[in-house]
Length: 210
Image (cartoon, rainbow, N blue to C red; front, side):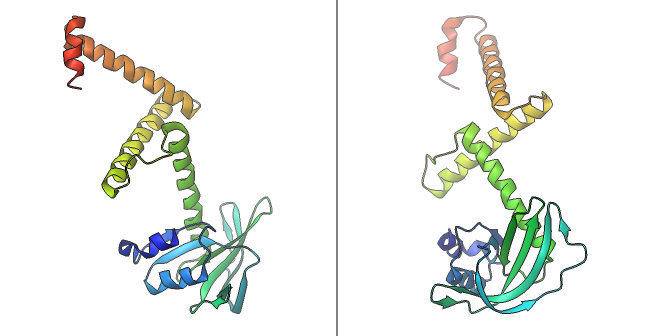
């Protein structure tokens, strides 16, 4: 993923959010040199030098996270130290679990950085819904246009299913999907019957144009 972000010029000036799958210190430097911002997580046992503390505001509560520490430092990897200083933010969840965020965004508050990372989880939940309920586990096409068409069609379907779930007060998404499919089937059958004027012999002619 790091290589993909680095090879996408359209991401310059924008913020990419990723998890610990990208931890290369060289990659952090490469993205920064290209003017690409990022927010990620790191192992709490990270190695850093030249640590300079930043002031943590009194209102350190950000949703379920409490900001413990905010500083800048050089990050160390395997036989490599970053050329730039990076922002390291430590936070703790209500259940005691600790998180360490790393970013090259220097002007945002620590609470804002944590909020940006939290949005990544919302996206993860949505794509999990697409995979589990709408069979978006595999791409049919490998070219960019084909992947975009498949993604947009799946997202439109997801919006319709979620809207149906909310409007009909269906408790679970899988039930909403089943009921939505049955309602759509009934509507299509009704329309076909109306189009063929009640004559089943005309149905094949109509279906070939659908």
